[in-house]
Amino acid sequence: MTDIYLDNNATTKVDPLVVNEMIPYFTEQFGNPSSIHKFADGVARGLKKARKQVQELIGAEHDSEIIFTSCGTESDSTAILSALKAQPNRKEIITTVVEHPAILSLCEHLEKDGYTIHRLGVNKMGQIDLEEYTKLLTDDVAIVSIMWANNETGTLFPVEKLAEMANAKGIMFHTDAVQAVGKIPMNLQDTKIDMLSISGHKLHAPKGIGVLYLRRGTRFRPLLRGGHQERGRRAGTENSASIVGLGKACELALEHIEFENTEVKAMRDRLERGIVEQVPHSFITGDIENRLPNTTDIAFEYIEGEAILMLLNKAGIAASSGSACTSGSLEPSHVMRAMDIPYTAAHGTIRFSFSRYNSMSEVDEVLKVVPDIVAALRKLSPYWDGDKPVEDPEQAFAPTYA
Image (cartoon, rainbow, N blue to C red; front, side):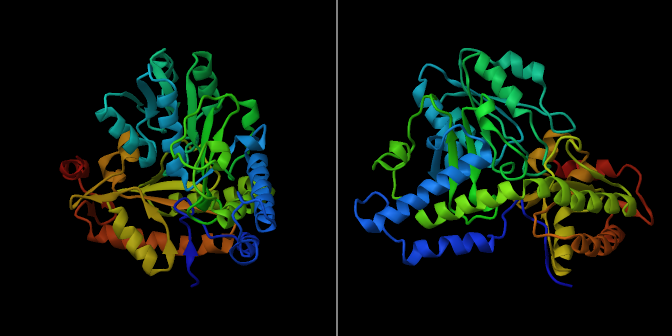
């Protein structure tokens, strides 16, 4: 069987058309775009074109709202730290407990520096409580940072509405849209979103390139200071080849956005149905009515996710787990814990994430493999007896769920 890649929320294959677009910028168009000679002219034009391509994908009002960065993490940090520096009298941040570590780790650091961090909890579908959110919107809040789509479950947050609510209170709103850009339609000029983060390698562009969308009129303080690049908002010589590559990837993403929401979604749905029908004690996590079209996170009860991944990998299938090894003991991810997924299932969640490079035939191959893998592992599980779980298996799991 040919290897099957279903881990596109971790990273994506660089589109060959993106590579072709980039190659001249390593050899022929190698000038520094800030220079004033002809070697710079072509590069400057390439960067301007890329900025326009990003603008069109996300529906920004003007290409000047696009700031190129090194990655989504840099964009996240720039957004939050800028809001704090621009509003020194506001010492509070609102976020959620299911954000990417790029947000959560920064907030933990800021908390040690004296800032107050409000972490919104989520329900069993991974959605926040709007009433709780409303109560937190006070004059002391510098910025709200809530992801557009969760990287594990694909759950979509109502960021347009959340941004409007924040804006009505005079509070800046940032969204980590790393998983959402290129997968769902966007039109930022019709929203109150002030800042938005993008990572190129999530949409078939190379690693090491990102974007911070900054709505015109939003108060801003640069994270990196030095040269005048990016209109003085992000110092450092531009990564020209990768910027051009990201621009092309955004153009292609816009062309394929309908395909993402029909054909890719159909592949995801077929895999889900097949697994849930064939594998007892399995279920989908997150908000199945409001999620990315390419993502499914499936919990397999009474077995460990890492063991599933090892056998999938042996069969030539790449996916990922919501669990991680911490201090030598396996713990469910912070997202599974936040949604209060039962102990017996939180350890065995597997995320399958598709792209336009996948096919229905690959789905069929995966469906031939997964039921046998789960059945084999359950035979070895102390929490499984024959064709059913042992009595009170959750009690056996509980001590490891710290």
